[in-house]
Amino acid sequence: MRTWISLAAVCAALFLAVAPASARTVEETTPGGPTIELTIPDTWTAQQDNDGNLILNLPGGRIAFSVTVMADDRELDVSMAEVFSYIQASAQRVDAAELSGMQGALYRGSFVHPEGFTLNFETAAVKADQNWVAAVTIVSLPGATQSEQDAAYAIRDSARIRW
Image (cartoon, rainbow, N blue to C red; front, side, top):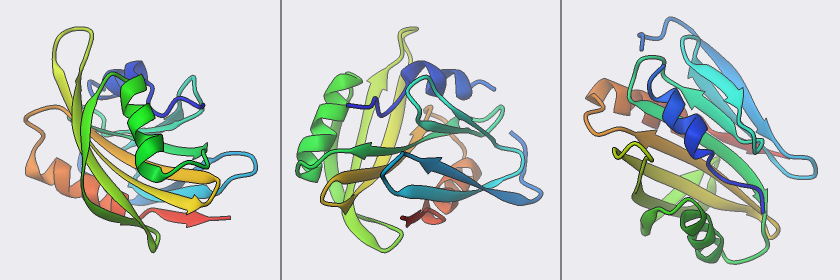
């Protein structure tokens, strides 16, 4: 199974803030699977981690994203429980979620960074079809400002899944 969040990449990203001037589109693609497109401010960075996940960062801020497409034919809750276990996170399904018109689940949780601080996350995940899971995760440090959180939700809401 492809690793869903690269803990080191996301944690590093959280320490790299600047108000957005304009926007651009970034994509997470997986051969044979769907593509997730998101619109991010030009000031944000986008890079692939060692596991092939797209990591988006608000430079200098307390918000980052992990964007993932993974092959998995199991029920969504089963797939996500394995992901959360892999990253040693406590998480639970808290609500329904939608990405690009597809219905799924919203999970909230946290995990402890090796340096001892807690990272909170919120994952919107959907079954893009019977064999693929698409997920957009907002990762934040405690103390993220309201404007940072608003920007994060706007980016997640911009997600478009296409084949």
